[in-house]
Length: 284
Ligand SMILES: [Zn+2]
Ligand SMILES: [Zn+2]
Image (cartoon, rainbow, N blue to C red; front, side):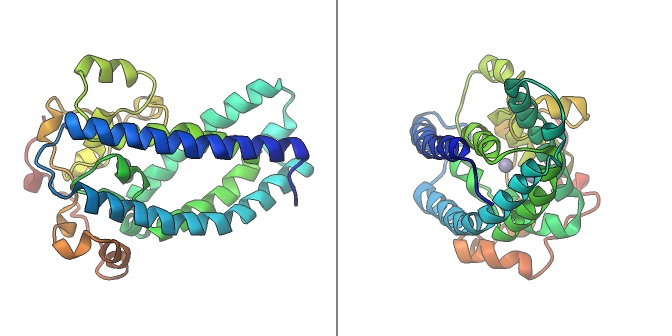
């Protein structure tokens, strides 16, 4: 399977733009985190950031391999007109908008499933284990979680009828948003409130990274914030600076580095107490 010439050019342009956008946004957020952090007292930002970025580099190698599989299934769906968007008669722009929005909705449910199924949670816990969450946490995912995610996309993308340029554009738009909502920046509350009418903001996502499970199991959206409101998982804490980030099972120093993050899910199951409300303080 091979992309058409137009799609190849489009994909190449989006690819280049998304790398530039992601690197620029990360640099800006790192600078703002340095001067106006929400959570203070961080002493190992560089080591912490490098471990997260190293994990991302390993995942990028896997993603490169998986891209061929994604290319095959999406093109097969397009050529044989199997996917929903290939079958409906709509203007091109409408198909792009629907593809991006519906896929964002899929990401919401996939994330929710990662919290629900023990096998998925075991690896997703690596993302939540970050007690010093910042913009680099946006790419802190266990390689096995990325592999599961690709496997699921291999089914969803051809059924929806998304094309490779649409997938790349989705990634290009959401990665900066994901970096933004993981960042440790102190913003005016009003600005966060205005932004979260549309996209997921730091205030929303800090709650998702709380150790207290009712908060951990909330705010699953990736790009648009609407999904949490529609599906009843939207939650905020009045004073976000009081949120205790991370996971209890990951407190030991040995799990902070790249090797620790990578191997822990294969060892003792990253257990979650069925009801740990009493351990984690009161809801605000
Ligand atoms: Zn999560
Ligand atoms: Zn996160």
